[in-house]
Length: 441
Image 1 (cartoon, helix red, strand yellow):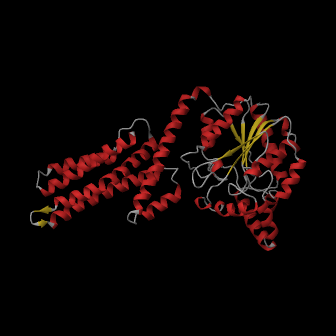
Image 2 (spheres, rainbow, N blue to C red; image 1 turned 120 degrees about the vertical axis):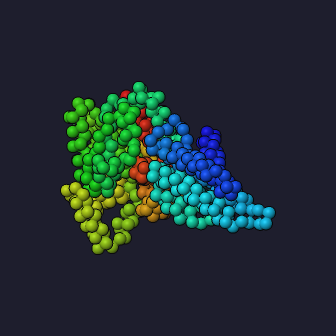
């Protein structure tokens, strides 16, 4: 309601400024009115609202959405005004029409680009896809209205979500809801590395730290078999224990990282140092489609892909990447034997999280492609891992979203840094860690 009132107030101000300029031209009013019109118009574009509840990036984004709304509201009335002012008793005065139309066209052009640049630069929820669609559809009559309405909706949802988040974090700041007894170790999945420049876990770690969490990272190489990855993870756990003086750690592990963690806990004696393991979209029962691909792909192709990958990640810092070993350990047959040989430790609390994609066309490559394979061979999945395969431990949480793209393998770790109107991934992790704290971990 407030956003609607802000947009209407801005629309009225912009319409008045443009109308004043047109009337000044048509009725030869004092030229100083052009200055008044320009001041009002420029002022409205620079400071479209006096909203105090949001600041910084969110303020720019919120103002951008209001400006785009004002563009939609004023473009038709201003065009009608230009046409009506060009009429006389003898018909159209084309000189008037050209001047008024030019004023309206220039004004609306400024308003549109002012709004679109603001939201394009500041919005994270919109994503690259809708930015491209917006630019393309901006050239197609009628269609561009629906594209613009979607952009406004997405940006307003984001501003509302972020504003609520800031308020919520302020209200619970003293409670330190994520200040667990033991520090957190976030363990990445296969084909990625922990990086200071690009955090694998997106905006999640900062949100947890704002609420009191102490965070470390697994530090394994990008592609090793479970055994070697587990050994590297075990070394990290020992380092965290030594540096913090904590008795144990809580592990949150994504994808293959969950299998690496289970191996370190059961096979390498880390059960005495791990209080809880939360696996996120981990293929505990493996992937049938991965096994099919390995079995049917020509040997030369497999070796070429593995060689290219291993070479690339050696340049990135890995000392001994092994693409085929990493993929082979994710097959259904290997995971079946792994589960028999790696039982849960009675001293560790195990829980798991899974999710699924709703529509393949709404996801990024290669998940939109691998989703089809996984669905054919395995069933409902997140682009790689099925819900059934992700189940492990004493509790299982299935994440859902009404958004057409659902919640993918990348969405569960905020890899794309995008929000969904009905699913807040950062707040979800806050709730998970908060529950660990309440459980005494």
